[in-house]
Image (cartoon, rainbow, N blue to C red; front, top):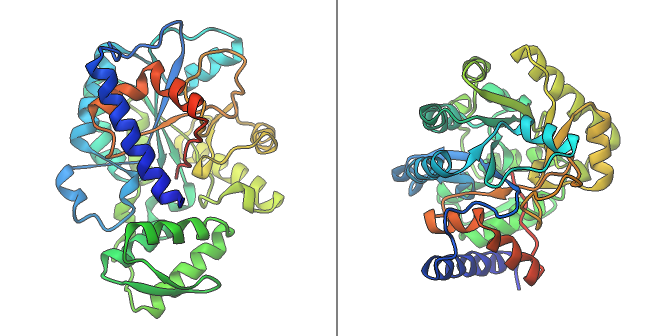
Length: 348
């Protein structure tokens, strides 16, 4: 079974289980009994009417309307804390109170400022944005996965990618298979091959890639009103496929730039694509970070013995309606996942 088919089956299965839980009265207010925290991982927040014509990777999008409803629920029924406060509690060995939530965003897209921040500010809720520092302000152009997504939106059916042959991008499944193959490459190589494929297919560059990313002025404005910022590397490289020297540079340089631009310590890290191993976690720790977030099958933090440099998160996107969202905040989601032995997918 292909990863794409497996993902669709998991999505539909989760939706069915969520509705069954709702009908049986099992969702309640969603608070985790006996203590525990859920860390939520968002990427992009956009109005629903933009999703149909969205030219980039739609799997990263949560609609602005859904996000507003989710944040209203969290504000009314949960205890939303700054991520650093949760990390510090875990490092002290404290038990987290029931219904503790941490809100995070990956990559540093501009819609975090335009669409997500106004909702968070209205409810006075904290969040942490993990910045890919080399892309702040659009300095490096689009992320390579958004460039690949542009091929399909531009009407391209097949395209030649160096080393990967002539590939179909006519369907989301075919495109996603190509994305997975590109993730096995060092990030500079993935960027080069994608740019050259676009040039061969005569796909012009996005006129103003800076519009897609936060600027440092926006970062500082958000920080002044309760949003914190952590590192997501410089280039969004997948650490397991890079050299040790490149990994260390990505960790240290991104941290230094954030501290310089914000004037505050950068103590938290987020693994690109959620890829975190024990050895990588030690490298992150050695780079001076006090905690780091990933993804994983164990998505609820319920004990103080968890590794603070590999904290699991629950991914949220446009497929998570309110019933599915409440299901993910309940203890049932994790129990079923452990029962089935399912592995969580990677994040951007």
